[in-house]
Length: 122
Image 1 (cartoon, rainbow, N blue to C red):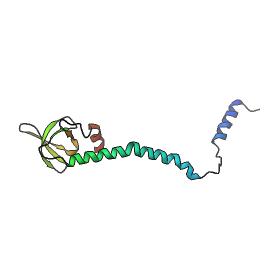
Image 2: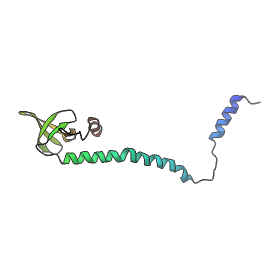
Image 3: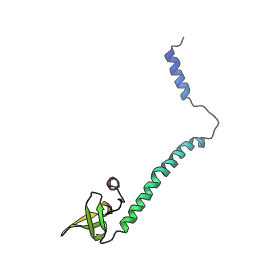
Image 4: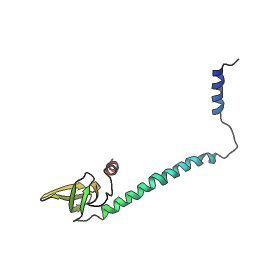
């Protein structure tokens, strides 16, 4: 006689046994491809569009623009050179910041978040 535990264990092994259904092995890839497609359209495509928007904003930045950094510093652009921007934050007080730290124009919604610029640098 078999014990009930042995019957349950044998049942689990029988469930895991490969059964040849005669179907195409390519059919097993369909769920995987669907998951990748959903991932692309829900996560990657919107992220790429946002990165392009931020890049266009940073390229259109010009001297005289009043901006806010991702760290919350308000200032006016006095010089742009390569990847750095010089801000005048008070009379005779100028600081150099990374272009990636520019969050947006003053009085408008931020183009990029502080978390996004921190994640982009690492």
